[in-house]
Length: 119
Image (cartoon, rainbow, N blue to C red; front, side, top):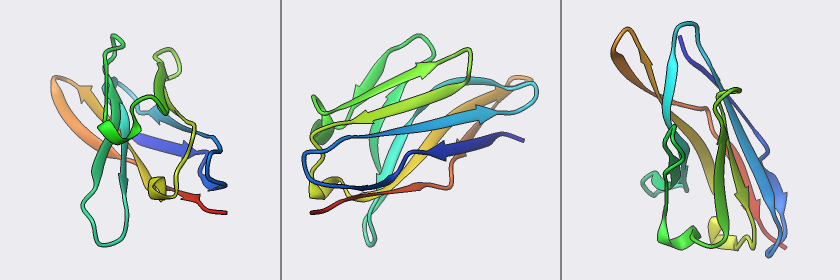
């Protein structure tokens, strides 16, 4: 079993910053791509950003230049630094991890953390 523990969501004013983190654990698992998606009610879940184990990253156009993904492979943890937040960034943010054990790949989702950008 893989467990993801997310933290860091909350309420922030427009223009503010928040940092999300997601720690992955699971006996015998290796973690490859790690990243973040977000979802608002009535809409599909959308990609925010992902990062490979070797550090290659991609971002949704809407967050480029404002959000930064990073990861600590020793801690199996991925971070999302969000700056210059806008009301339209309000969503539930989900951690997403590709975990592999015995050659079998699993896609694992966190429970989500609410980010609300409002004055």
